[in-house]
Structures are given as C-alpha cells and as structure tokens.
Image (cartoon, rainbow, N blue to C red; front, side, top):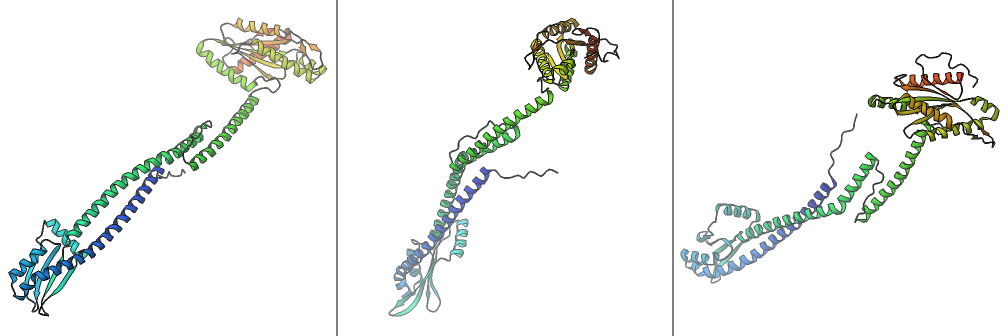
Length: 423
C-alpha cells in the first residue's frame, strides 16, 4: 500500500504568508493604538473646548434668562453654537421649563445615522453651567458636544490605516519576491539537483554558490557529498564492469566464454536473416595438447593457449569474434559472409598463423597445429546450437582424418566423430 502524498505548502507561500501576516499585524496594531490614543486625546480636547464654549454662551444668554426672553435666548445660543462643534444647547429655568433650545441641523441620512451610532459609542461630553443673577441661580445652561470632529478624525484615521495596509502589502510582496531570489531560488536549485541525482544518478551536477552564508555552506556540503558519490559511483561502475567481464570472459586468455559467444551468435543469426548474409562458426582444437600438458607441464600448456588466443585475435576482423569454450577448444564467429568459401579462407589463414613457434616459460619453443570444423548459416543449419554441434563434429572428423586441416560440416552427424583421436 503506497503512502498518500501530502500536499505541503511551498517555501515561497510560507514566507509570503509570514511576511504579510507580520506586516498586517504590525500595521493594525500601530494603527489601532494611534487611533485610540487620538480619540482619547480628541475627547479630552473636546471637553475643554466645550467648557470654554459654554462659558462664552452663558455670558451671552444671561440677560435673556433674566428677562425670560426665549427668542433672544435662542438667538444668543445659536449665534455661538452654530459656529462651534456643538450638537445641542438649551437653557432650563429653575422651575424646569425650557427657555431656549437649539439643535444642530442634520446632514445626509447616512452621515446622521453614522454620527448617532458614533455618539452612542463615544458618549460625547456634556457641560452644565448655572446662570446666576445677583448671586442667585436662575437657570442652567446645558451644552452637548458634537461628534463631527471625532467622526472626521475617525474616517481620516481609517483611510490612513487602509492606505498603510495597501503600502505595507506592496512592501510585503516586494520583500517576498526579494526573499525568493535570495533564499527560495537557491533552495529550489538545491532540491532540484538532489532530485536529479536521486532519479538520474547525475553525480556530476553541482550546487551553484548562494549569497546567504548558511545556504552557501549547505550547498558546499552537498557538493562535497556529490563528489564522494561520483567517486563511489565510478568505482562501482568499474567494479561492475570488471565483474561482468569476468563473468563473460575466460580468465586465462581474456577471450569471451561459451555463454557470451552463444549470445553473440544468436544475435548474428538474427541480423543475417534480415540482411541475407551468411554466418560461419569455426570450431578449433589444438592438436596433441594433452601431450604438451603431460610432458611439459600446465604452465607450458597455458602459454600455448595464450599464444593461440593472441594469434586468433590478430588474424580476425574487428567484427568477428573468437571465444574459448574450455580446455584447448576455441570457437570463431565470422559475420556478414557472402560465400562458404570466405570461411574456408579464414580457416587456411588460421592454420598458417599458428605454425609459428611458441615460446614456453622454460625457454624452449614449440610448434602446434589446429584442427577446424566449419558450419555456415543458413547452408548447414538455422540454429546456433546446431551450428556449434555440426562444427564440433566436423572438427573431430578432421582430427581423425588429418590433423591441422579443416572440414565443412555435414548435415548427417557422425556418431563416432568424438571418439578418442589420440589427443
């Protein structure tokens, strides 16, 4: 059961949210604090100013209160209140009757509604002053402040706060993009490189330098790790290639072994089926090799096998193949032949090449000969194993009849071909 992939946020998104959150929190905190402080200061100032307005209004309306003249009293109140930040002013006589009452006319419905809500919230100041005549109080002047100035201040404050938020958001976006260039991009490059190394094993890639010390140090550590991985990978590839070569080649002569030869023969037959060429198999055996081993020792026999392998590699074309099947048996694969005679000419060349004396470890020299059997695709067989078997049988017929020569394969197998021929 595969583990579900979590949808995690990117580093850029996290930094953006962090920047925006910090900026908004700071702006809101400062803005709200300044607004509240301004409102408190404005409220105190309004109270002091309203007290001064009430004193001036009291002096103006005193005569009207003495003579109980409501028209004059209202005109005196309106004269001052209309020019100041006053919502309502009234003169109340000692017996409770209202001598004069003035209220500021309302504006638009929305403004009036907002001002009423703000007045209910802020509770504007109210000043009450006694009107005294000849040492005795005759009435009270009640003046209630207007929230217009507070309303304008609050609207201005909110507008400034909104502007600060917009400017701060723009600053946060700029900082986020700058942070992306300095932090996110180097980390993305590092993550992409690590992914490429894990997926494609491209150990030659390296992390570019970064402008931030910690990220640059991290990149240097990654590069050092990639250096070690690259060395380790090259060593591993070399060891694997060596093991693969050992698994498919003979340790003594360095020639391919039986399994490798059969794979190449099958491939050559498939190619020949498409191109119409012939493929030949030459099965070679060193004459009297057992006698060399018994009389001169295994070191001499090994020297003979190595010399034969070198001669065969030197005489063959680059596309041809020679392999050691075991003991003193060698097999040659000739590709892209046009006639059977092309294979017999190669057999003649091989027979002539091995007649040169071979130096033994003891200092002596010895001359050997090779017997060869030849089988050609498609003339003698269509299958790789049959071709090898027919070439092997032909080689044994040569050893029985005349050592050091060659014969082409016969479609009728000779059951006595592999009898002991005195090898």
